[in-house]
Every structure is written in C-alpha cells, then in structure tokens.
Length: 522
Image 1 (cartoon, rainbow, N blue to C red):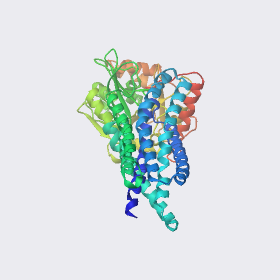
Image 2 (cartoon, rainbow, N blue to C red):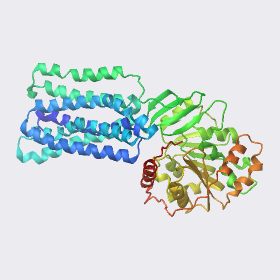
Image 3 (cartoon, rainbow, N blue to C red):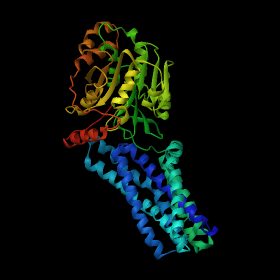
Image 4 (cartoon, rainbow, N blue to C red):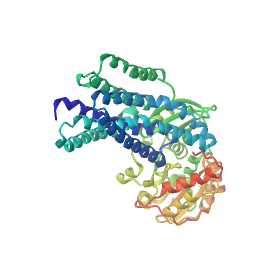
C-alpha cells in the first residue's frame, strides 16, 4: 500500500461504516411511526441494497470520467450533507403517519412510508459511489487491480462491520436517532474536508470554505430541534420518551392520572398504572384467573411462584403482588430501558419481583425454577417473536410448570378472525392436554390458557365461590366466565423449523384493513 493512498482506504472504511449505520439508524427513525415488523425491515434492507447497487454503477462510471480526488471528496461531502438532513426532512412527512394510524388510511400511511424510504436514496447512492471511486484512484498498475479492489472492499466491509454494532449498541441509546444521523454526517464530512484540504485533491482554499456551510447547517438544525419530542402522543401528555436498542419508548399520562407505556408506533398499550385502581379492564387482569382452571376448590394459597415473559412496566406483576401477596415473581423483559422506565414511572419496585433482562426463552433454558403460572405477554400484532410460539418453546414452558401449573398467553385477534388464536390452540395441544380461551371485551385480544393436568372450562365457574370475597378476583373471574370462547384448533402447528407466524399475522391485518376495519391493540 503506497503512503499517498492511505487516506483513500480511510475513506473506503468511513463509507462502509456510514452506509450500514445509516441502514440500521433508518429503522430507528421509522419505528416510532411504523414499528419494526419484518415487512418494514425487508423494505428498508431491500431498498438500501438497491440504492447501493445504483451507487456502485454510477460511481464507477463517474470515476472513469473524472478520476480526481477532488471529485471523490466532493461526493463524500454531499453524501455527508444528505445523511445529516435525513431526520429533519423526514420529520414533517413522518408526522402524517400518526393520523394515518388513527384512521388507518392506507394512502396516508403508505405515502408517508414510501416518501421517507425514498428520502434515503440520495445519501445511500452517493455512499455507494465511494468504493468504486476509491478503486479507480488507487489503481496505478492494472496488474494489481484485483488486489487493490479486494483490499478496498475488505476495508469497506470492516467499516460496515463496525457500523453494524455502533448504532443500536452505543449511539442510539446514548444520543438518540436524530443525533446519530448528525454524528455520522459530521464523521463523513470530516473525511471529505480532510481529503479536499490535501494537496492531491487539487482544490482551492475557497472551495473548502464553501463546504463549511454544510456541517454548520446540520449543527444548527440539531440545536434548534434539541429537546423536541420524536413523536406527539395521542390521548394524553408525554411525560417521558427515550430510545433503546430495541424500542422507541413513550410514557403517556391521561387526564385521569393513569400512565401508559407505549412502544414504537404506539398502536398498543403495553402497561398501565392508575392511582388507587388495580383493575385495568384490559388483558392483564385475566392473567390472574389462570390458576382457577384447575379442578375446584382451588385456593389462592396454592399459587406459589409466577414467571412473566414480557414484563414490560410491571402491570401484571403489580396485580399478582396485590392480590396474592408477596409471592416470588420472575419477570423477564428483553429491553433494559423498559425495566428502568417501569421502575421510575410505574412504581415497579415490588420487593418480591425479580426483574430479569433477557430473552424469555433463553431465560427458561437457564433457570431451574418451577412455576404455578407462566404468563406470556410478549405478543402484539404484528410483532410476535416466532421462537416464543413453537412446540419446542411450549415443551420448555411445561417443564418449568408445577403439576397444577397453567400457561397464559395474550394473543391478538379481530372481532371475527381467530386464525392466530386457533393456530396457537393447535400448537399448544401438541404439548398440553387442555386449552381454554377468554375473549377480552372491547379489545382485539384473547387470553389462551393451557393446563398441565386435564381440565374443563367449567372449572373456572366452579371456583367462583373460592374467590367470592376478593374484590379483584371475583369480578374478574365473573367477566372471564362470561367471555369464555370455545375455539377449535385449525391444524396449524408452529415449530422451530417452521413458524409461519409473520405470514399469518400479515394476512390477518391485511384482510381486516381491506375489510374497512381499524385495529388498536393492548
């Protein structure tokens, strides 16, 4: 490697780093408005690759027509400028997504999504121009062109390797999505300015001053937007918002003092806490009646230990503690920032609660504990972790249940489409002898129960006298009995090898929306 070409390889490294970082940060820009479904990810990845392909093609031809370092670093400067502008130009367009979700306007949602994704075309195409341009400038002897091309792509890929980790693991949780774009822009601009300033760039000093307006404008925009919410809330006041490696998180306080945990596009309430009120009228209440599918009389004292996969901000944990006393609860939540939000804003400080930051299935594979109840509240259409829906997962769950243990799962549905619920029943019946379903009134949720021992749905009504004096359990159990819904399996069984959960949830949503419905999930 010749010393005069060293900075060309630095440029290739920076181009690779910023390219992949922009791709990952793009998902964080979109997730508060469109979520993180596989369809969103596939669109981002596919179009970014398409833009890079265009950049490689254009960059190669451009380099042949103007094989000058000044041209390369002007391209890098404009790429840096375009990267820095993305979050500020996208914001007005993304603001259209909120009313689109409320009315479920396909045109409004689709239009804003496509507009923002197209916004990435210019910066990514320019970033794609960098590697072929570097190769053209670095090749001085055609006999070594293959070696140099391989070296350039190796260095660029090493940059991409670093870019795969920086956004989600460091930058976004630390400085946020908007400032991550700004930092990537300034990094790339530093490379451009250094290249333009070098003697080999053949650039006049006046041109350097011309390119100073770019970072100054980006910095000015960042300062003026500092402290502005990423997204306005609907139905309450945002009292806190943050971004983690997994989610965009909002805490919203309603007019009656209740606090709600919203994630990503805000289409569902993941936790709720109301002053002086334990009942929520939501799906969380029904997890507490799970033990009473056992044969009567089943006493509350028989509930010994509970595991919650999908702890969120601790609604179910709080209810179990208040109703059953300080029994041991292991709450598993994959996002450490959600746990911190629960402790800070939702009073998730019960001494009997052991909050574990981990993937739910990975936690079960490591623990030796056995539970009376395992609750899974980690599903929400269309974001359902496939590995938490399979026969193999439920076999592991059963191994961690006591002889009178019960599994309770919150599953999405529509008013007349139970295909996902039926598929879950089919899968559960491969492992458990009995399953029961309760519809949550005025919602798009059903709670599916599976019991270790053979049980009857009528056991729930037969256990009503046991909880007659409990102000929470008795009315909740009455509503549960009234909303028992016999559901037949549909023969779809999810396995680790084949869990077609995305196909089913996407079809369910599309069918419902095309039928004129609007969906809101808890």
